[in-house]
Length: 206
Image (cartoon, rainbow, N blue to C red; front, top):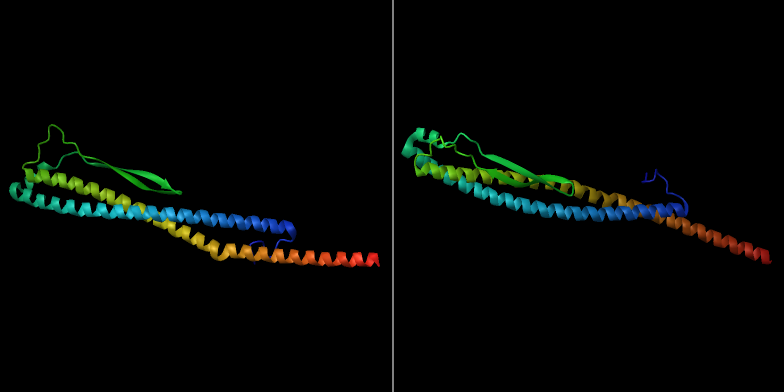
């Protein structure tokens, strides 16, 4: 079975259709290859950004843990409870689209706001810990967003590569084979027609 129901389309009309189908398939493969390059480039950028944000996250977290231990040792667990504001931080993720793939692109961070009635963190150690933990959470959010973007882009790259492979390994060779068969049949038909015309001309002159 070929792509035209198991038989080659006859005549010049069939040849024209096959030429158009082959040109469309070649153009489609070219566009998909361009899409694949863009996806892979953006994926590499996202993974590099995820690695950098992950490194910042681990550094800030280790720094925050050090300050936290120092603050608790100096002020006790009661001081830790006083250092935590009632408000919560907020993370907003912005989304973008690349070649039809929606993925996280930006992360905005809003620090928690301590109300005027709330006490300030007792001691500088817990204040430093709070600052470091906020930086760690911000970096963690950026790491997660970049990692998710890389994974989404990579998944689409896999699907695109499969489509390109199918075009180059199956669809395009099949169209070329069908076109060659049609062109051969037309060439043979034209040769037979030329022979008949020469025979008829010779017969008429005789």
